[in-house]
Structure formats: structure tokens, C-alpha cells
Image (cartoon, rainbow, N blue to C red; front, top):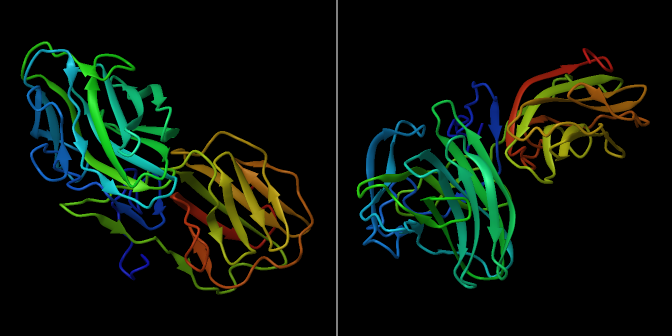
Length: 364
């Protein structure tokens, strides 16, 4: 269940608990962007410095977010100028932090799209440009003061829409804002329409959140909104044996850099976990072993596994790492799926096809 005791939800843009990527397990998160589905530069959550050149309104094109129509950015003139809806400043603590802005988008008439995070205190941007034909990343830039680029993601969906994000480290400023636009070229902030009335770009589901990777979408309607951390555990019914065993699961992450997360875990011992998206780790409480490195499982479900008995070994995509001595105890208590059994260290990704065996190296 969710941490609230409610049934596990399905508000992720990859899959729900029965979907192809599996169960989504994420930390608590808060979307600071007001009016995430109503990108209207006339309302309190959005703004613009060039309303003589463009406006925004709801389209007739359904988005992948529960069929809610996209908003569209309309050209009012043919001038080569900036047409950038941006969120109102959100307040943050006065410390340097990683923040992530994410958007669900669809191509309009512009060949490129730009998304960014603006640091109001330093008057500085971090920005990323995408090719709207396939939503591949083509360029990124950061300001010299106040912002440092961390990373970006792009997940192309079957209908040609995409979920794209940018992560940046801001300085101790207390205000940030999210921004997006259709543009003429990579690195440009201008759009030059063929005619007034052209739709530059479609957007919806905007999220601005604290953290180093995008999490699943949280809807807002005029105020910030939060999602409770996902907690899924199985009671201890002797389904993990200290003498020998194997845990196998398929996992993917939403993050691309290092995070200390659990895939299947009991307490400090008895866990298969990740510290980076390119290899697995297994721990018995006193020793941690590592698999060899492989292809990143970011947005890419991959088998991870741990086996214990005569030795302890970690596996990634079916390939074993170097084994180490096993201390004879593979943890105690309930079994957490996508988290530790005390409800922390969520995968921030997906988990599926979990299997626990009472023999060392079973099926590997």
C-alpha cells in the first residue's frame, strides 16, 4: 500500500502497477508548479513578458495524461521573437539544491523545443534543447552564475508525445521558475512562425520539484501538491532462508546519476540494491558485493539479482560480479519491494517479476 494505507496508485507516465514497467516506487515529492494542466499566461500560475507576440489556450489535442487536452502556444505575430510561457516564482529554502522541471510535450510547427529552470536571484537559466521530430537532446547550456546543469531525460511515447526534463543545481536563491518554448534552432530562444496563428508547441503536466531526477506526475490546481512515498512490504513467512538463496527482480530507474536505493530489501542486511544505474549491489549486513558494470537501466527494465550461501554474489543483466564471503545471515524482518522494510530508500523507478528461491544461484 501507499504510506497512507491507500491502494497503490497508478499516476506514473511509464506504467501502473500492472503495466509493462511494473510497480512504481518513489519517495515523497511535491510539485511546486501551480496550474500544472492549465498553462494559461493570464492566470496566477503562469506569466510571460511577450504577450503581444503569443498567447496560450487549451487545444483539441488529447494528451497522455488521462486524456486531458494539451495547452498550446499560439503565435500572434510573425516576428522572430521569444514566445516562452514561464511559471510564477516558487519559494525554496536559501541553500544550494538540485531541482528538476519536467513537461509532457507534443511538437508544434517549430523544429526544436527548449525547456529550462530560471534562477530569479541570479537572473540565470539552465536550458536544454530537443529535436521535436524524435525528442532527442541536441544541446544544453548553463548560466555562469547561480545555476549548474546536472542532467536531462527524454521519454518518447507511442503517440509521438514525450516526457522531458531538466535538472539543475541552483544557488541559495529563494525563487525559481520553469519555462518552455518552441524554437527555431538549437541554442535559440526565438520562434519565427510562417504565419500568425501557428501553434509553436503543445505542453501540459508541468512539474517543478526538489530532487536530482524527475518523479511521476503530480497534478496541481492553483496550489502545490504532494505525493506520499510508496511502501510495499511482505510479511516474513520464512520465504528468505539464511542458509542459501537467490533474489531476482527486474528494475528500472528514473534517475541517471548516483542514488542509494533498494530493489528488494529487509533491514541493513538482506538486500539487493543500487547506488548507480549500471550495476547491482548485494549486502548481508557486514559485506557489500558488486556486479560488473552494464548498460544503464534508466527507463530500461533490467534483471538484477543477489545470491548467497557458499559465497555472496551480485548479478546485473545476468552477469555475475566477483563473489565474497557470506556471513550466514541475510537480514531479518519483512521484505520491502522497491524500498527498505522500514519504508525508506525507495527505488525511484519500477520493480517487476520478483522471485525468491531457497537455493544459491537459482535460474541464474
